[in-house]
Length: 266
Image 1 (cartoon, rainbow, N blue to C red):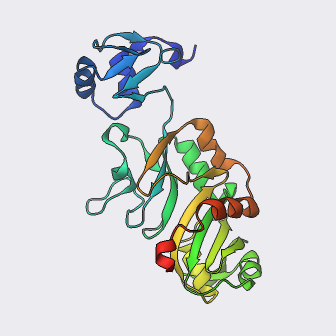
Image 2: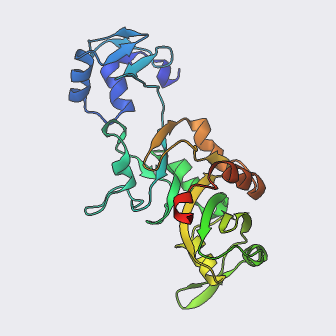
Image 3: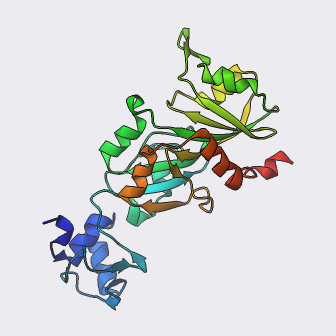
């Protein structure tokens, strides 16, 4: 029998699905903030079946999940880390009830880069997403200081050289497409330090803004503002490992993000 089919105390179930303490949950339950099948429940010891019962906490549905995944629209200026004594981290953007103890970002985005970041407590999925041997495709929208040059496409596809330590090392082949005079979409299968910015710098241009809008087939929702996040299911998180293409990603980006920095282009 699956654990979600086993009856358990209401407060225990909520404790496993939120970052709230038992004491906090007891107060919320007794205060009428929890419903089970549309009925307000005020007894923490009430037995519930997570598989069958509809449970809400402060109006928000709470579903059983062995793992928890949050799709965050990381804003620029926030570091990709679980904790930092001096700077705001991506985990600080989560609400207090969602800050589960084992959550961590799957991969990283540079300080000045914004966009899609998966935060999860599933170490296996996180490792698969960032492991070089899985070559997970990541898609970026870059705003350039100078007009796009079609020569970038062959240059990046051949593996542009970047300085690593005391020598120059080739990047893995990358795809590039133009969607505006100074807008480019890139498909990368690795994550070197400041890679997109360094690639364009090596090609003689400069990236002024950078947004990661897609990983595999997992897309950043166009209506999710910077700093916002949503809870996603296992099947949604697994879209990060599904195939996409530079043409499909560029079409999605052109529809939803081609005017993302319009205020900066004027």
